[in-house]
Image (cartoon, rainbow, N blue to C red; front, side):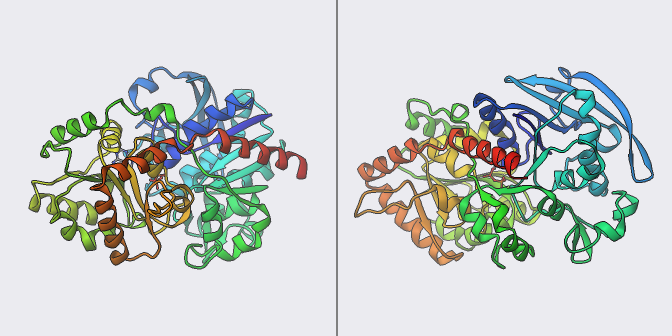
Length: 459
Ligand code: ADP
């Protein structure tokens, strides 16, 4: 079975969030399980030079996008046994950031249509095209214009970002007929065009990244305006949980040493007795930052240390920066992106805070557990599916959790977790179970393969 995996980001080339991890790890596991897979993504100038330099030019041509005629080139790199193809166009991808540009509509329409244009250059006839998030939402739409007929799987990693643009783009940029493509069953959404709707309406099967999130997006609260569509499409919607690459996050022998090293590195008191509470995240409302902030000064007044690693919304960056200044002694606010430091924090901390408002899957909680750092999460989406709440009577569970999106519930469970922390025996038992959780990709990759088979036989 030949699969083309289409993504807007992939580690180690470029990553802004969980999709970048998934786009590296899932193809590797699929290949291991016998799938012939190739990954295709934009060639951003922001990709680390050490990879850009190793890429080989494969070919180029000119393609039409509405009235435009655009250069489209392809570069190639094999990394960890996987074939990666990079769509090259300097005008579109030589930018300061990878998303959030004035012409994202045009850039990702070009990318999505370009997938078909380059199939002959890369000499690959996929049976399945596996698309991810809105950036490749038009891939199933443009299929109508090409002769090949692969089945298309569309995976939603985060429904919040939908790729919604003004309706004037439909003909002028996308080159699609207004009468045919601008209606509710096609791309129209609130009198604008939605790439996400393209992915949902035109693919053969849709997946999202946890079983709980599948149910949540069918409700008004989490459906981001598309809940009706998901209820209607229940039959083609499936939840497949993400995994992590356990080899990438191998714990060291002594967690205590790692904790002391971390405290030293970040200028905190080197003391094993003080619990370290950490957060590593995009600074976005989604991640439950408001209910953390509601309680943060109370938390910081306890005998704990607080570490944050994150970038994003300026409002949050400013807030954490200022709080860090006020509580110099027991906080470390790191307002940047750094994967090495992320690992050190995951490993050296005791408690990992992730009280998301919504969470399609979430990888951070799994990474933390793998290092024996206990997650404290809100019971939502993938967090609910991966963290089992500690039950002191049965002595079961792998972390701590609470139900409602409320600061009060958060602080209550945090206080409880800190109380359990003081009982080393109990804490270590939970740690042991958390570390043992099998969050590897092997099971989920099998589920994708059976879905590919279903797409090939049912349509
Ligand atoms: P999302 O995809 O919503 O951002 P996930 O939990 O699925 O959330 O994935 C986030 C990934 O990004 C994790 O691998 C996490 O460690 C990483 N990450 C987030 N912020 C940072 C940062 N500032 N520095 C390093 N890694 C980060």
